[in-house]
Length: 103
Image 1: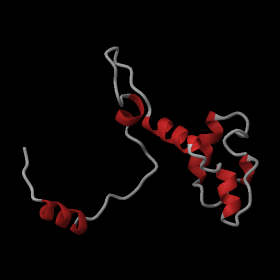
Image 2 (image 1 turned 90 degrees about the vertical axis):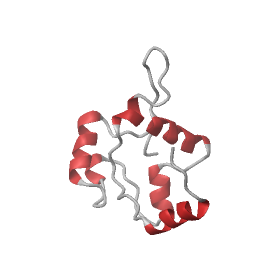
Image 3 (image 1 turned 45 degrees about the horizontal axis):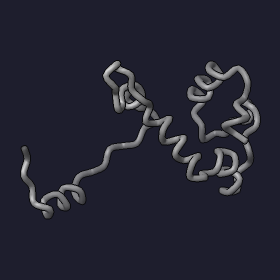
């Protein structure tokens, strides 16, 4: 077991660069978090999305409007800030534009 003083921990937190953020989530977090004895886990990202809904976070389009941006209502409306490959992945998953996620 490691033994560090609180000063050393603070020093490490302030001097070490944080990891770059990405849109990919390790399968251990999406499939095996809180795994039960049958080997079934829960999805951390799904929990986080639901937690946000429970706490009243606005939808994607509501937040876009809050930021002074236009709503997205069709796949052809997808803004430049969403990578074209990501949009292609969405269109391969959803036959119709997900109105429930983008009210």
